[in-house]
Amino acid sequence: MIGIDYSNMMEEVIGINGISDLSIKNISSQIENAYNMIANREWKQLEFIDLPSQDTAEIKKIARYIRKSADNFLLLGIGGSALGPRAIIEALSPFHNLKKKPRVFIYDNVDPRTLKSIFTVIDLKKTFINVISKSGSTAETAASFLILWDKMKRALGKEAFRRFIITTDPEKGNLRKIANDEKILSLPVPPNVGGRYSVLSPVGLLTTEVIGINCNELLEGASSIKSICLKNDVYKNPALLFAVLLFLMDKEKNRHINVMVPYMDSLKFLSEWFCQLWAESLGKGNKGLTPYPSLGTTDQHSQLQLWMEGPQDKVVFFIKVNNFGTDIKIPAVFRNIEGYNYLPGHTLKELINSEQEATELALTKAGRPNFTINVPEINAYYLGQLFFFFEMATAFAGALLGVNPFDQPGVEEGKNLTYGMMGKKGFEDKKKEVYEYRKRKGKWKI
Picture 1 (cartoon, helix red, strand yellow):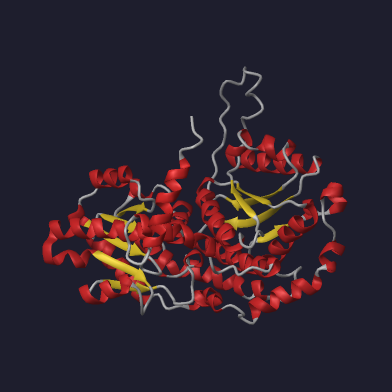
Picture 2 (cartoon, helix red, strand yellow):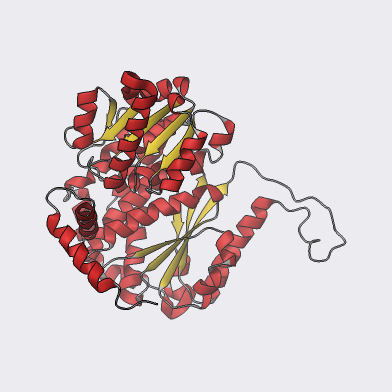
């Protein structure tokens, strides 16, 4: 089971920059209220809590067909629809495309160079395409889908529909209509599960199966921590504790930047996934906590200086993996070089763990708050635990901050302006706004 060591957040360890048990006690009523909001399902979008018990038979059936029939699997989606699957691939099979088929490609950002590059390395006739959009109206995914549908129709004619899988709302939206009309295979995103909370739905599970990982192991991991993340005791509920620690650091110490530092390459994209979850869920009404992705030991050589001596506005939390599943011994060569002769006899695991502990201690000595999430190992089971843990922590944090962690009102204006610029019916006023903006924009420039 994953666990949290938060010793280096406490006042008696790091001094005035820390919090105390009294700090936690003083907000006990807020903690209780936040807990009740989640436990009592005050928001209908808390349906993600039920995902660990879903039936995966249809997902597995479709994935078997893809593995048997395809050389390539191209995923079209953005936000949680891409970040979740990418985090799974990088954590569980980071060099998948060099080892086995189908190769997996994720096209999220609508950069034409990227899509053109994908076209140079895949044969569409041997490719399956998973189109993911909960709403079915996401502009980036819609544009990508239109391009791929046209190309696939040109390549395969009337059989093109057989190469698509649409993952969307089970009842409504443009993609649902197209799936029904064109007889395209489809998988549902549960109506009350938002995109950034959907990694443990078909959004992430189909890709998991396509790369040859049993998606039930992800769900089993999530299920194993579910009851713990629903305990009404901040000292026994790691998700609630995580939210409380970062809430208190913001409230009492004005530390609103949360730096996530996994000490394992394969968890780099878990940080990217977490950043969307944390930022889009909590940044509302001039409130919020700012996530910052990092990677140990890499960013000790780029960001650590800032954490140590920069503004007192950060909390660093490490993800430490106890079992890497392998290790490599450092050989006894060039022992005559004084700067190298301390390394032989040790292993890479020893070195990376030493670097993590050294960074932790250095921050602690400098009075900089930090804590560690300990993970036994990285496999589908523990990755499922991490996904569910962070989703629950985000829901608790939203309740503590007094914001709705399931909407994104600040994103809508940008979408509407884009619709106006692209000529979508009903957004003519937004197009006018853009024209007026462009007139003003060039006044100050060099």
